[in-house]
Length: 237
Image (cartoon, rainbow, N blue to C red; front, side, top):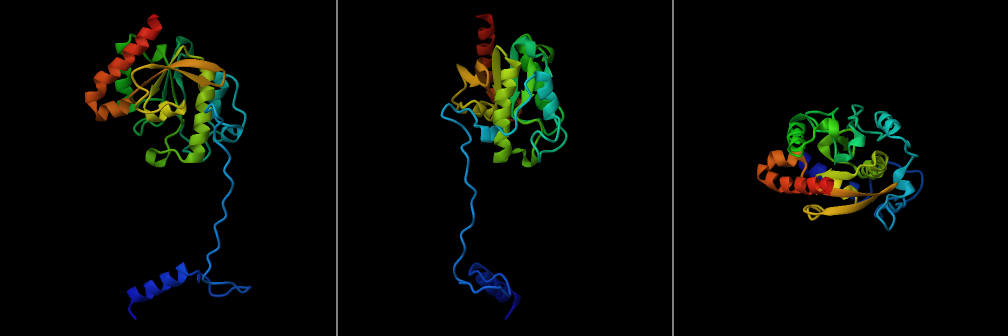
């Protein structure tokens, strides 16, 4: 018998349940025991607000303490230790929420090449980083740039709490990850204003493309400008 046939035979026995040489008790080797599954707690209530199971520990109740908390290993355990702190002026009335830091700027709320484009978008509406408040759904970029479900649940709850502490007049949601935080559908949420719930009330939200998407799809910049005009109109109202 050659190695290929031997390996195939071993795989057949493993699939049949013969995965140990000896056992203390008799067993039916052809019956596979069902895998144990932990019960799943609901992640959100009927209004889409994350439940206590999703929220986990009590979150800090001031903006400064929240910013300090997300820099610690207690917040979002398992993520890289290098964290991006929120930046800008929360009293400016405009909060920008992205999904996570950029690969080329892991310690900035929105830096690197995408951040330079964002600076241009802010200048187009007569603002800068000093006259807006920038934050991310997740303070560190996970491996592969995707949020595993336990981290995602914590990030959604923390983001809603973060918005309630910042209390902006308008919330600009950058990209699909941030848009879906508030129960909106992407990309259908674009093109109009929304009133979304957070822990302390409601806020007017506008959805647009993430700058990293615009770098890869520059033809969408005109659509992004249309979203920014909605934002301008809301502040002028």
